[in-house]
Amino acid sequence: MPRNVVRDRFFWQVAFQTVAVNFFLGGFGPSQGLLREDQGTTGAQAGLHGTALGIAAIIAGSLNSRLAHKYGRVKLSWLGVALFCLGLSAFILFPTYPTTLVSIMFAGFGISTVVNNGLTMLNHHAGDKAALTISQANAVASVGFIAGTLLIGTIATNYPDKWRLGLFLVIPMSLFIYLFLRDKNYVDHVFEDGARQTGKMSWKFWVSWVGFIACIGSEFATSFWAASLFKDRVGGTAAVATTVMLAYGIGMALGRWYMGQILFRFHLDQQLLIVISVQFIGFGIFWFSHNFAVSLIGLFLIGAGISTQFALASLRLIDLSDGRPDQAIGLSSLAAGIAIALAPFALGLLDDQFGISRAYIMVPVLIAIAFIVVVTIPSHVSQKKVQSEL
Image 1: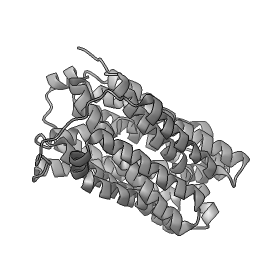
Image 2 (image 1 turned 90 degrees about the vertical axis):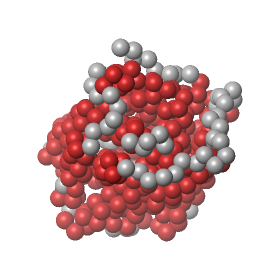
Image 3 (image 1 turned 180 degrees about the horizontal axis):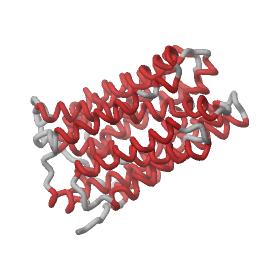
Image 4 (image 1 turned 60 degrees about the vertical axis):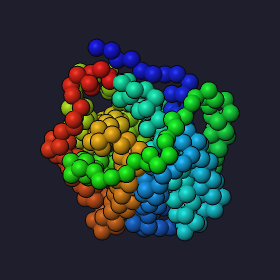
């Protein structure tokens, strides 16, 4: 059974586009404690930055099919990179609370545009090798997440007032990717006039869509607030708590690179159930732990469990879309937007009311919902087809 991956120049272009946006997410998500201290906000107010990202993802998802058919997926992905850099620059240069919400919304639109079109481009480009190719492109992107977390945590530890400046590296990084890693010979997928994908999705698609919301909600609730839970349980400064999120990023990177190869004999749904279970085990270890090393193990397993959920759950939605991948990805971005908008904010609100430890009980509820949906609504992908893909 072949387990080949398409790693040509176009693969690296898409992978490094997502490296850039993941560098920001790796630094910004775990730094919510730092941002909260700088701005003097409550947990709910800090969580609104996640809401801003979510609203941006909703807007990007609603426009994705229309924009992709107008500009093409490749050009649209570069427009997403440009808008992301613009929003990021505003976040760094104008650090007051209301302004950061607006700038994060602009950056979030660019992030969602890059991620959405990266997935559909690789799905089209890699053909029957799409599943593992997408997973490994996401693994490369995780390097950006790890680097962002490490850099912001290090700067915050040594220069507490300067941590935002580390995010500026994304600007020259994005320019380098465009000038030197872009596949200038790639022929973009051309859509016929009037071929924009529309129509009603099946009830099975919508139930799976709810499961997708649960997957993304548990991921962003973890990336935004796990550092705060670590600080509450183990102690230390906000800067140290931000740095320990490296374990989460490393687990995610290794999971994205190896999980598909380890689980290649399993059906798509079985793979998703296994990684959701790994996430749940990691959560249990992390939530009950008051020990530094044990907490790192829990974070690593959470990252490994979350690693391939986005790709697998997205492929499920594409499979259940009756041949409308751009529309399915647009709706998945809508789902991701809802999850990103609500999960970090809800956790921050619960933190204000009950403390971060009790508030975190929300996460296993989301994990359970995702698991039940996959069990209840199987995908149409046959065992033979999945094996040929992986």
